Image 1 (tube, rainbow, N blue to C red):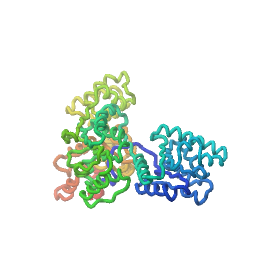
Image 2 (cartoon, helix red, strand yellow; image 1 turned 90 degrees about the vertical axis):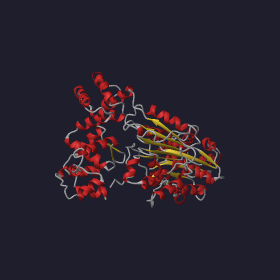
Image 3 (cartoon, rainbow, N blue to C red; image 1 turned 45 degrees about the vertical axis):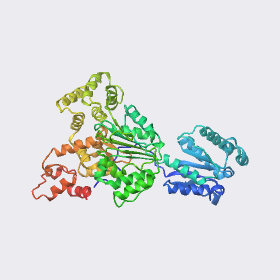
Image 4 (cartoon, rainbow, N blue to C red; image 1 turned 60 degrees about the vertical axis):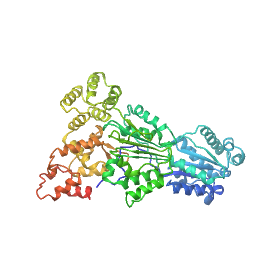
Length: 557
């Protein structure tokens, strides 16, 4: 049974854990029963976790610690500046703390000028001027700093600064819908980790970005194709990070081919809907039911969809249908190893992700081996000659560089001689020599992860390996250092499919014909054959990574 996580995807950047998405600051007497009440309901309806400051009416005193914590634990603050806002000492203290968090922590603040002229706030005129005149000078000084900052940022709107909106009370429903949509676009957006050393990524992504800019009102579907390890997913992530804020909804579905096999169509449909709609969807009755919901919920949104690692268009159609329902301006990117998966037309376009040139290849190898863009002078010749065995493939360069980190020139030359004797392939010899350089325990752990544990919690896997008498802390750290295994932000183990495929092939070669003679079994058909065969005899149970019955029960039930 596959791990019960939402996807098996490459690591993404760590990010702060917020308790709230939005802190809502407002003058209760002005807007609680109207604009703010409707806004709060709309935020909750869209799945945006909102801290509502509703204590002012009850106490009217100083801002309490719960409210201050609410500000600090929220990703954004929405400040509804109404005519009576500045007359409340509570509101002004609240705003002072919000601005303090903005200065000291980069807290994002969105002032909403509700039936208030922004210039009255900036220049301390009108109702704001009258209210400020009643407060103590020291607090007024703090407020003037805040108003000045609001004015500065209002003239230079950016995601990192304040976004100011002036709304009259008319068309209130449309205004609330617009604001919630803008907040949703900026909340819970996972900026994907492109690469540890993104050499040549931007230049290879530029043609794709140019294509996506064409015919902004039409639908565009793009196929990124190329050999395994060449960086298709990396380029797709770079493109995704560059443009996702331009869409009403976006989703990056990783490892589509494998997830379809392991978890099925409805699982991917739920992932798609949950990511875009910001709410959790229950299991669908079947894939047709899921497809109907996908179309109904998403057909009115301008979408950016990335489907990573697809073998055939039928896999795409199983998840999202025939694509004829997409809203104008939507973009779909598909990564694949299959050329002509999409036949070029007015709607479809394909782009081949090329290998790195020699200059970029040497730079990437050096960054992983020496943490420098250029190799040391005494390594330069060996490094340059090793490039011919990587074929300009980023995965091969990364794995090779990491495996040779800290080694002498003699070891570099020895690795090159070994590669000369191996089959004339682009990547596999490089990956195999990196595996061969591991000690026995590290090889054992690598094969266990390749066969069973991609997508599983690292601590859970380590507890199993420790129970088998291994030393997983050192072993997994070595695999991570050599870029053979990675750990995602949520502590899940991840491995490139070429590395996992190599590991599984090494196990299969132990006994190509008889699965019962292999040290590990992961395919349910092989497990069934071995368990039901009257002639099979598992010669050495110590070759299994952990108790075979437990493994089969957990993995395949």
